[in-house]
Amino acid sequence: MSRLVMKFGGTSVANIERIRNVARHVKREVDAGREVAVVVSAMAGKTNELVAWCKEAAPLYSQVEYDAVVASGEQVTAGLLAIALQQIGIPARSWLGWQIPIRTSDAHGSARIESIDGEGVIDGFKRGEVAVVAGFQGVHAETGHITTLGRGGSDTSAVALAAAVKADRCDIYTDVDGVYTTDPRILSEGKARRMERIAFEEMLEMASLGAKVLQVRSVEVAMVHGVPTYVRSSFDDPANPGEGTLICNEEDIVEAQVVTGIAFSRDEAQITLRHVADKPGVAAAVFMPLAEAGINVDMIVQVVSQEGMTDMTFTVGKADYDRATAIVEKVKGDIGFTSMEGAKDVAKVSAIGIGMRSHAGVAARGFRALAEKGVNIRAITTSEIKFSVLIDEAYTELAVRTLHSLYGLDAA
Ligand code: ADP
Ligand code: ASP
Ligand code: MG
Image 1 (cartoon, protein in one colour):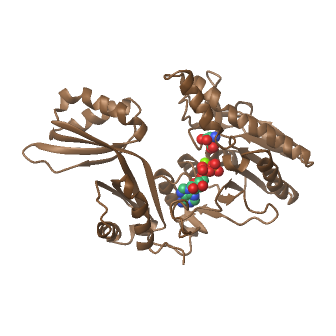
Image 2 (tube, helix red, strand yellow):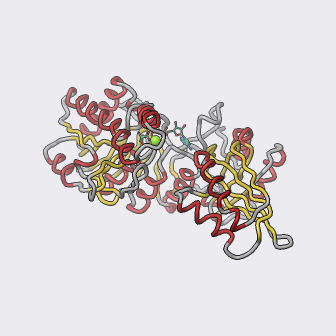
Image 3 (tube, protein in one colour):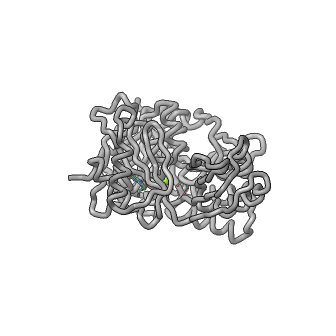
Protein backbone atom coordinates (compact mmCIF):
# COMPACT_ATOMS: atom_id res chain seq x y z
CA MET A 1 0.00 0.00 0.00
CA SER A 2 1.42 3.38 -0.86
CA ARG A 3 1.82 6.08 1.70
CA LEU A 4 1.50 9.80 1.08
CA VAL A 5 1.99 13.08 2.93
CA MET A 6 -0.08 15.99 1.58
CA LYS A 7 0.53 19.57 2.76
CA PHE A 8 -1.87 22.48 2.31
CA GLY A 9 -0.74 26.09 2.77
CA GLY A 10 -2.63 29.11 4.11
CA THR A 11 -4.56 30.09 0.98
CA SER A 12 -5.60 26.48 0.50
CA VAL A 13 -7.30 26.43 3.93
CA ALA A 14 -8.38 30.09 4.04
CA ASN A 15 -12.01 29.36 4.98
CA ILE A 16 -14.39 26.47 5.58
CA GLU A 17 -15.21 26.10 1.88
CA ARG A 18 -11.48 25.86 1.05
CA ILE A 19 -11.08 23.29 3.85
CA ARG A 20 -13.92 21.24 2.35
CA ASN A 21 -12.08 21.43 -0.96
CA VAL A 22 -8.92 20.11 0.75
CA ALA A 23 -10.99 17.24 2.18
CA ARG A 24 -11.99 16.34 -1.40
CA HIS A 25 -8.31 16.21 -2.44
CA VAL A 26 -7.60 13.95 0.53
CA LYS A 27 -10.60 11.73 -0.28
CA ARG A 28 -9.30 11.17 -3.80
CA GLU A 29 -6.05 9.75 -2.43
CA VAL A 30 -7.78 7.67 0.27
CA ASP A 31 -10.16 6.25 -2.34
CA ALA A 32 -7.12 5.30 -4.43
CA GLY A 33 -6.09 3.09 -1.50
CA ARG A 34 -3.32 5.24 -0.03
CA GLU A 35 -2.40 5.81 3.60
CA VAL A 36 -2.50 9.56 4.05
CA ALA A 37 -1.11 12.08 6.50
CA VAL A 38 -2.07 15.70 5.87
CA VAL A 39 -0.07 18.66 7.16
CA VAL A 40 -1.88 21.97 7.35
CA SER A 41 -0.88 25.62 7.75
CA ALA A 42 -2.87 28.29 9.54
CA MET A 43 -5.65 29.98 7.57
CA ALA A 44 -4.31 32.71 5.25
CA GLY A 45 -3.32 35.83 7.19
CA LYS A 46 -3.76 34.16 10.60
CA THR A 47 -0.06 33.82 11.45
CA ASN A 48 0.57 37.48 10.56
CA GLU A 49 -2.27 38.48 12.84
CA LEU A 50 -0.89 36.39 15.70
CA VAL A 51 2.62 37.83 15.21
CA ALA A 52 1.18 41.35 15.27
CA TRP A 53 -0.66 40.60 18.53
CA CYS A 54 2.60 39.54 20.19
CA LYS A 55 4.26 42.78 19.12
CA GLU A 56 1.27 44.78 20.33
CA ALA A 57 1.34 43.03 23.70
CA ALA A 58 5.01 43.86 24.28
CA PRO A 59 7.71 45.16 21.94
CA LEU A 60 10.26 42.80 23.51
CA TYR A 61 8.00 39.79 23.84
CA SER A 62 9.19 36.40 25.08
CA GLN A 63 10.17 34.15 22.17
CA VAL A 64 8.90 31.14 24.12
CA GLU A 65 5.42 32.62 24.46
CA TYR A 66 5.53 33.93 20.89
CA ASP A 67 5.73 30.28 19.81
CA ALA A 68 2.81 29.36 22.09
CA VAL A 69 0.77 32.09 20.41
CA VAL A 70 1.69 31.61 16.74
CA ALA A 71 1.45 27.80 16.87
CA SER A 72 -2.27 28.15 17.61
CA GLY A 73 -3.19 28.98 14.00
CA GLU A 74 -2.27 25.49 12.83
CA GLN A 75 -4.18 23.84 15.68
CA VAL A 76 -7.42 25.39 14.41
CA THR A 77 -7.00 24.18 10.83
CA ALA A 78 -5.92 20.68 11.89
CA GLY A 79 -9.10 20.27 13.92
CA LEU A 80 -11.30 21.78 11.21
CA LEU A 81 -9.91 19.55 8.48
CA ALA A 82 -10.39 16.46 10.66
CA ILE A 83 -14.03 17.51 11.10
CA ALA A 84 -14.45 18.13 7.36
CA LEU A 85 -13.01 14.69 6.58
CA GLN A 86 -15.24 12.95 9.12
CA GLN A 87 -18.18 14.78 7.56
CA ILE A 88 -17.55 13.05 4.22
CA GLY A 89 -17.09 9.67 5.84
CA ILE A 90 -13.32 9.53 6.20
CA PRO A 91 -11.99 8.54 9.63
CA ALA A 92 -9.49 11.20 10.70
CA ARG A 93 -7.87 12.69 13.78
CA SER A 94 -5.85 15.81 14.41
CA TRP A 95 -2.31 15.77 15.77
CA LEU A 96 -0.41 18.66 17.34
CA GLY A 97 3.37 18.74 17.17
CA TRP A 98 3.82 17.72 20.82
CA GLN A 99 1.38 14.86 20.52
CA ILE A 100 3.32 13.09 17.78
CA PRO A 101 5.88 14.25 19.08
CA ILE A 102 7.89 16.34 16.62
CA ARG A 103 10.96 17.13 18.72
CA THR A 104 12.90 20.26 17.92
CA SER A 105 15.74 22.42 19.14
CA ASP A 106 14.91 25.28 21.50
CA ALA A 107 15.64 28.00 18.92
CA HIS A 108 12.21 29.54 19.43
CA GLY A 109 10.81 31.14 16.30
CA SER A 110 13.11 29.15 14.01
CA ALA A 111 13.50 25.77 15.68
CA ARG A 112 15.02 22.80 13.88
CA ILE A 113 13.35 19.41 13.81
CA GLU A 114 15.52 16.88 15.62
CA SER A 115 13.35 13.78 15.50
CA ILE A 116 9.82 12.68 14.70
CA ASP A 117 8.16 9.65 16.21
CA GLY A 118 6.05 8.24 13.38
CA GLU A 119 4.55 5.37 15.43
CA GLY A 120 1.25 6.98 16.41
CA VAL A 121 0.52 8.17 12.90
CA ILE A 122 1.38 4.75 11.46
CA ASP A 123 -0.84 3.01 14.04
CA GLY A 124 -3.63 5.32 12.87
CA PHE A 125 -3.02 4.22 9.26
CA LYS A 126 -3.52 0.62 10.39
CA ARG A 127 -6.95 1.63 11.75
CA GLY A 128 -7.75 3.26 8.40
CA GLU A 129 -7.39 6.75 9.83
CA VAL A 130 -6.10 9.88 8.12
CA ALA A 131 -3.65 11.83 10.29
CA VAL A 132 -4.19 15.59 10.15
CA VAL A 133 -1.04 17.18 11.49
CA ALA A 134 -0.63 20.80 12.56
CA GLY A 135 2.32 22.14 10.55
CA PHE A 136 4.92 24.68 11.66
CA GLN A 137 5.10 23.43 15.25
CA GLY A 138 7.00 21.07 17.48
CA VAL A 139 8.09 20.67 21.06
CA HIS A 140 11.39 21.11 22.85
CA ALA A 141 11.58 17.88 24.83
CA GLU A 142 13.69 19.10 27.79
CA THR A 143 11.53 22.11 28.63
CA GLY A 144 8.24 20.90 27.19
CA HIS A 145 7.83 24.25 25.44
CA ILE A 146 5.98 24.50 22.14
CA THR A 147 8.28 25.64 19.32
CA THR A 148 7.76 26.87 15.77
CA LEU A 149 9.92 26.25 12.72
CA GLY A 150 10.14 29.73 11.19
CA ARG A 151 7.85 31.34 8.63
CA GLY A 152 6.77 28.94 5.93
CA GLY A 153 7.72 26.06 8.24
CA SER A 154 4.76 23.80 7.46
CA ASP A 155 6.60 22.78 4.28
CA THR A 156 9.37 21.43 6.49
CA SER A 157 6.89 19.70 8.82
CA ALA A 158 5.46 17.90 5.79
CA VAL A 159 8.71 16.74 4.24
CA ALA A 160 10.16 15.69 7.59
CA LEU A 161 6.99 13.75 8.41
CA ALA A 162 7.17 12.08 5.00
CA ALA A 163 10.74 10.99 5.82
CA ALA A 164 9.72 9.79 9.30
CA VAL A 165 6.80 7.63 8.18
CA LYS A 166 8.68 6.53 5.03
CA ALA A 167 6.07 7.96 2.69
CA ASP A 168 6.47 7.31 -1.02
CA ARG A 169 6.08 11.00 -1.77
CA CYS A 170 5.24 14.38 -0.31
CA ASP A 171 2.81 16.64 -2.16
CA ILE A 172 2.96 20.33 -1.26
CA TYR A 173 -0.33 21.92 -2.34
CA THR A 174 -0.31 25.69 -2.70
CA ASP A 175 -1.90 28.50 -4.74
CA VAL A 176 0.27 27.93 -7.84
CA ASP A 177 0.42 24.71 -9.83
CA GLY A 178 4.15 24.18 -9.48
CA VAL A 179 7.55 25.81 -9.32
CA TYR A 180 7.93 28.47 -12.00
CA THR A 181 10.98 29.92 -13.72
CA THR A 182 10.36 32.97 -11.55
CA ASP A 183 7.62 34.14 -9.18
CA PRO A 184 4.58 34.22 -11.51
CA ARG A 185 3.35 37.29 -9.60
CA ILE A 186 6.21 39.46 -10.88
CA LEU A 187 5.87 38.62 -14.58
CA SER A 188 2.31 39.78 -15.04
CA GLU A 189 1.77 38.70 -18.66
CA GLY A 190 2.16 35.03 -17.81
CA LYS A 191 5.72 34.82 -19.08
CA ALA A 192 6.94 32.64 -16.22
CA ARG A 193 6.85 28.95 -17.05
CA ARG A 194 6.05 26.01 -14.83
CA MET A 195 8.85 23.48 -14.65
CA GLU A 196 8.16 19.76 -14.89
CA ARG A 197 11.17 19.08 -12.68
CA ILE A 198 13.81 20.98 -10.78
CA ALA A 199 16.93 19.59 -9.09
CA PHE A 200 17.18 19.70 -5.28
CA GLU A 201 20.28 21.92 -5.50
CA GLU A 202 18.53 24.41 -7.76
CA MET A 203 15.41 24.49 -5.62
CA LEU A 204 17.57 25.02 -2.57
CA GLU A 205 19.17 28.06 -4.20
CA MET A 206 15.84 29.37 -5.55
CA ALA A 207 14.30 29.12 -2.07
CA SER A 208 17.22 30.66 -0.23
CA LEU A 209 17.48 33.47 -2.77
CA GLY A 210 13.87 34.51 -2.27
CA ALA A 211 11.44 32.10 -3.99
CA LYS A 212 9.25 31.50 -0.97
CA VAL A 213 7.23 28.76 -2.65
CA LEU A 214 9.07 26.29 -0.38
CA GLN A 215 10.81 26.91 2.93
CA VAL A 216 14.56 26.38 2.46
CA ARG A 217 14.78 23.76 5.18
CA SER A 218 12.06 21.65 3.58
CA VAL A 219 14.22 21.35 0.47
CA GLU A 220 17.25 20.40 2.60
CA VAL A 221 15.26 17.69 4.35
CA ALA A 222 13.85 16.40 1.04
CA MET A 223 17.35 16.27 -0.41
CA VAL A 224 19.00 14.59 2.58
CA HIS A 225 16.28 11.96 2.98
CA GLY A 226 15.56 11.58 -0.74
CA VAL A 227 11.85 12.36 -0.39
CA PRO A 228 10.25 12.77 -3.84
CA THR A 229 8.49 16.11 -3.35
CA TYR A 230 5.93 17.70 -5.65
CA VAL A 231 4.60 21.25 -5.65
CA ARG A 232 0.98 21.25 -6.87
CA SER A 233 -2.15 23.37 -6.78
CA SER A 234 -5.04 22.92 -4.37
CA PHE A 235 -7.06 25.06 -6.81
CA ASP A 236 -7.02 22.27 -9.41
CA ASP A 237 -10.15 20.14 -9.70
CA PRO A 238 -9.87 17.61 -6.85
CA ALA A 239 -11.11 14.94 -9.25
CA ASN A 240 -8.44 15.68 -11.82
CA PRO A 241 -5.41 17.60 -10.49
CA GLY A 242 -2.28 18.47 -12.50
CA GLU A 243 1.03 16.80 -11.77
CA GLY A 244 2.84 19.90 -10.51
CA THR A 245 6.62 20.16 -10.30
CA LEU A 246 8.83 17.34 -9.02
CA ILE A 247 11.89 18.29 -6.97
CA CYS A 248 14.36 15.54 -7.79
CA ASN A 249 17.96 14.50 -8.25
CA GLU A 250 19.99 16.19 -10.92
CA GLU A 251 20.38 12.90 -12.80
CA ASP A 252 16.63 12.66 -13.23
CA ILE A 253 16.42 15.86 -15.22
CA VAL A 254 16.28 15.12 -18.90
CA GLU A 255 16.53 18.52 -20.50
CA ALA A 256 19.04 20.52 -18.48
CA GLN A 257 19.14 24.23 -19.10
CA VAL A 258 22.00 26.57 -18.29
CA VAL A 259 19.80 28.89 -16.22
CA THR A 260 16.64 27.34 -14.82
CA GLY A 261 15.22 30.15 -12.74
CA ILE A 262 15.38 33.74 -11.55
CA ALA A 263 14.77 34.56 -7.90
CA PHE A 264 14.61 37.88 -6.13
CA SER A 265 14.47 39.21 -2.63
CA ARG A 266 13.41 42.64 -1.51
CA ASP A 267 14.40 41.77 2.02
CA GLU A 268 17.92 43.20 1.73
CA ALA A 269 19.68 46.18 3.27
CA GLN A 270 23.17 47.34 2.36
CA ILE A 271 25.83 48.59 4.75
CA THR A 272 29.10 50.06 3.45
CA LEU A 273 32.09 50.94 5.61
CA ARG A 274 34.51 53.42 4.08
CA HIS A 275 38.25 53.45 4.74
CA VAL A 276 38.53 50.40 6.91
CA ALA A 277 42.09 49.56 7.96
CA ASP A 278 43.23 46.64 5.77
CA LYS A 279 44.80 44.38 8.38
CA PRO A 280 44.20 40.89 9.75
CA GLY A 281 41.24 40.57 12.09
CA VAL A 282 39.14 43.41 10.73
CA ALA A 283 36.53 41.23 9.04
CA ALA A 284 36.24 39.17 12.22
CA ALA A 285 35.85 42.34 14.29
CA VAL A 286 32.89 43.37 12.13
CA PHE A 287 31.19 40.04 11.55
CA MET A 288 31.68 38.22 14.86
CA PRO A 289 29.53 40.65 16.88
CA LEU A 290 26.85 40.51 14.16
CA ALA A 291 26.89 36.70 14.28
CA GLU A 292 26.69 36.74 18.06
CA ALA A 293 23.60 38.95 17.80
CA GLY A 294 22.05 36.35 15.49
CA ILE A 295 22.18 38.63 12.46
CA ASN A 296 22.61 36.84 9.16
CA VAL A 297 25.07 38.55 6.85
CA ASP A 298 24.53 37.70 3.21
CA MET A 299 26.64 39.33 0.48
CA ILE A 300 30.11 40.52 1.48
CA VAL A 301 32.30 42.55 -0.85
CA GLN A 302 35.67 44.05 0.00
CA VAL A 303 37.60 46.16 -2.50
CA VAL A 304 41.34 45.86 -3.04
CA SER A 305 43.08 48.08 -0.56
CA GLN A 306 44.75 51.34 -1.37
CA GLU A 307 47.36 52.69 1.03
CA GLY A 308 46.34 50.18 3.66
CA MET A 309 42.68 51.18 3.53
CA THR A 310 39.73 49.32 2.06
CA ASP A 311 35.95 49.65 1.66
CA MET A 312 33.68 46.90 2.89
CA THR A 313 30.09 46.32 1.76
CA PHE A 314 27.71 43.71 3.11
CA THR A 315 23.99 43.04 3.28
CA VAL A 316 21.67 42.01 6.08
CA GLY A 317 17.92 41.43 6.20
CA LYS A 318 15.89 44.67 6.24
CA ALA A 319 14.51 43.81 9.67
CA ASP A 320 18.05 43.57 11.09
CA TYR A 321 19.33 46.80 9.57
CA ASP A 322 18.96 49.07 12.60
CA ARG A 323 20.45 46.52 14.99
CA ALA A 324 23.32 45.81 12.59
CA THR A 325 24.28 49.46 12.16
CA ALA A 326 24.17 49.98 15.94
CA ILE A 327 26.50 47.02 16.46
CA VAL A 328 28.95 48.17 13.79
CA GLU A 329 28.96 51.67 15.28
CA LYS A 330 30.02 50.11 18.59
CA VAL A 331 33.07 48.35 17.12
CA LYS A 332 34.14 51.47 15.24
CA GLY A 333 36.92 51.97 17.78
CA ASP A 334 38.46 48.59 16.95
CA ILE A 335 38.36 48.87 13.17
CA GLY A 336 38.36 52.59 12.53
CA PHE A 337 36.30 53.29 9.42
CA THR A 338 35.71 56.88 8.37
CA SER A 339 32.02 56.56 7.55
CA MET A 340 29.18 54.11 7.39
CA GLU A 341 26.65 54.33 4.58
CA GLY A 342 23.48 52.32 4.40
CA ALA A 343 20.58 51.71 2.05
CA LYS A 344 17.35 49.89 2.65
CA ASP A 345 15.89 50.41 -0.84
CA VAL A 346 17.89 47.61 -2.42
CA ALA A 347 17.00 44.20 -3.78
CA LYS A 348 18.88 41.08 -4.75
CA VAL A 349 18.18 39.38 -8.06
CA SER A 350 19.70 35.98 -8.77
CA ALA A 351 19.97 33.56 -11.67
CA ILE A 352 20.18 29.88 -10.80
CA GLY A 353 21.08 26.80 -12.82
CA ILE A 354 23.24 23.71 -12.48
CA GLY A 355 24.26 24.25 -16.10
CA MET A 356 26.41 27.17 -14.95
CA ARG A 357 28.97 24.63 -13.72
CA SER A 358 29.81 23.72 -17.27
CA HIS A 359 29.19 27.00 -19.11
CA ALA A 360 31.45 30.04 -19.00
CA GLY A 361 30.31 33.65 -19.33
CA VAL A 362 26.75 33.14 -18.10
CA ALA A 363 27.00 35.84 -15.44
CA ALA A 364 28.92 38.20 -17.75
CA ARG A 365 26.06 38.10 -20.27
CA GLY A 366 23.66 38.89 -17.46
CA PHE A 367 25.70 41.89 -16.31
CA ARG A 368 25.81 43.24 -19.86
CA ALA A 369 22.06 42.83 -20.35
CA LEU A 370 21.37 44.66 -17.08
CA ALA A 371 23.76 47.45 -18.06
CA GLU A 372 21.95 47.89 -21.37
CA LYS A 373 18.74 48.47 -19.41
CA GLY A 374 20.47 51.03 -17.21
CA VAL A 375 20.38 48.85 -14.08
CA ASN A 376 23.30 49.72 -11.84
CA ILE A 377 24.88 46.85 -9.92
CA ARG A 378 25.90 47.64 -6.33
CA ALA A 379 27.41 44.28 -5.43
CA ILE A 380 27.79 40.82 -6.94
CA THR A 381 28.19 37.37 -5.47
CA THR A 382 28.57 34.11 -7.32
CA SER A 383 28.75 30.43 -6.57
CA GLU A 384 28.96 27.33 -8.71
CA ILE A 385 25.33 27.33 -9.73
CA LYS A 386 24.13 30.91 -9.28
CA PHE A 387 25.00 34.57 -9.40
CA SER A 388 23.33 37.40 -7.52
CA VAL A 389 23.33 41.14 -8.05
CA LEU A 390 22.36 43.78 -5.55
CA ILE A 391 20.48 46.61 -7.24
CA ASP A 392 18.15 49.53 -6.46
CA GLU A 393 14.83 48.07 -5.35
CA ALA A 394 12.93 50.13 -7.94
CA TYR A 395 14.59 48.10 -10.72
CA THR A 396 13.68 44.66 -9.35
CA GLU A 397 10.99 43.88 -11.87
CA LEU A 398 13.00 45.17 -14.80
CA ALA A 399 16.03 43.12 -13.78
CA VAL A 400 13.98 39.94 -13.34
CA ARG A 401 12.31 40.49 -16.71
CA THR A 402 15.63 41.18 -18.42
CA LEU A 403 17.38 38.08 -17.09
CA HIS A 404 14.30 35.92 -17.60
CA SER A 405 14.23 36.66 -21.33
CA LEU A 406 18.01 36.73 -21.73
CA TYR A 407 18.31 33.13 -20.60
CA GLY A 408 15.42 31.94 -22.75
CA LEU A 409 12.97 31.34 -19.92
CA ASP A 410 10.00 33.34 -21.28
CA ALA A 411 6.93 31.29 -22.12
CA ALA A 412 6.24 31.20 -25.83
P1 ADP B 1 1.49 28.53 0.97
O1 ADP B 1 0.64 29.41 1.82
O2 ADP B 1 0.71 27.52 0.22
O3 ADP B 1 2.64 27.94 1.73
P2 ADP B 1 3.26 30.51 -0.18
O4 ADP B 1 2.67 31.87 -0.35
O5 ADP B 1 4.17 30.26 0.95
O6 ADP B 1 2.06 29.46 -0.18
O7 ADP B 1 4.02 30.08 -1.52
C1 ADP B 1 3.37 30.17 -2.78
C2 ADP B 1 3.76 31.45 -3.48
O8 ADP B 1 5.15 31.43 -3.79
C3 ADP B 1 3.11 31.65 -4.83
O9 ADP B 1 1.85 32.29 -4.70
C4 ADP B 1 4.11 32.51 -5.58
O10 ADP B 1 3.73 33.86 -5.68
C5 ADP B 1 5.38 32.43 -4.74
N1 ADP B 1 6.56 32.11 -5.54
C6 ADP B 1 7.77 32.75 -5.49
N2 ADP B 1 8.63 32.26 -6.36
C7 ADP B 1 7.99 31.26 -7.01
C8 ADP B 1 8.38 30.36 -8.06
N3 ADP B 1 9.59 30.39 -8.61
N4 ADP B 1 7.46 29.46 -8.49
C9 ADP B 1 6.23 29.41 -7.94
N5 ADP B 1 5.80 30.23 -6.96
C10 ADP B 1 6.66 31.16 -6.50
N1 ASP C 1 1.55 29.53 9.18
C1 ASP C 1 3.00 29.64 9.14
C2 ASP C 1 3.41 30.89 8.37
O1 ASP C 1 2.57 31.62 7.92
C3 ASP C 1 3.66 28.42 8.59
C4 ASP C 1 3.33 28.11 7.14
O2 ASP C 1 2.38 28.64 6.58
O3 ASP C 1 4.04 27.29 6.57
O4 ASP C 1 4.57 31.16 8.28
MG1 MG D 1 4.51 28.71 2.32
